[in-house]
Length: 251
Figure 1 (tube, helix red, strand yellow):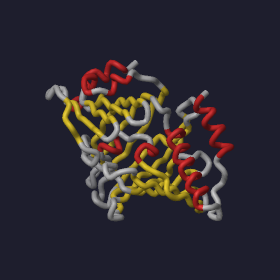
Figure 2 (tube, helix red, strand yellow):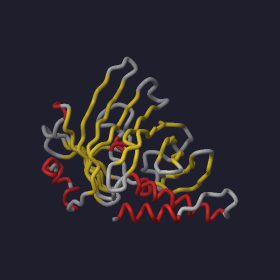
Figure 3 (cartoon, one colour):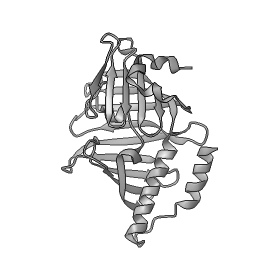
């Protein structure tokens, strides 16, 4: 019922943006759209499978398969299923804190948002993505042709990107393209959402995310989403002690 209720609420409560609205009203609409985007992308708590593909300029590819679980707005864990060399590795994010568990090491290690446990253009912040509204405030909303342009500002300096410029599908209220900038205004990467897919229970969202960066010319990374299902988890699942047991959650 929740996704349907959210769809009805957003359909009838989000008016078409007008640049003539007072600034306060425009800001409220921008923040409301940001909340809607989070709700359209995934349930608050869920499980899903993802394939990450890193493609180098010479065409060489490296692929990873991850089982991912999320609870509330700020707890995410991802278990590596393939390739065999990575199997059993687990990453955990609770708020701004991130860890990597490697079976041969046997204890969690601290990692940062701008590192990447898989190489390629996606960093840990991209792979352990929280709801956008957890890390960003919506500060501007514009309408240009067939899409909306939402500007997001990081809530604090620990967020991987200082500013996001998000092109939003006007009909489905999901991201189409995101430009990620540093505090100095430098473009760090561009994220391209595509292949709209019905995941059931009212979740019609992109099934592919591709990224490139002027800092990694010729490199490209792709993330494919599948098996997205709403599911609740006990809070202790998102603890350092449970990192070696995430595989037990698979059904």
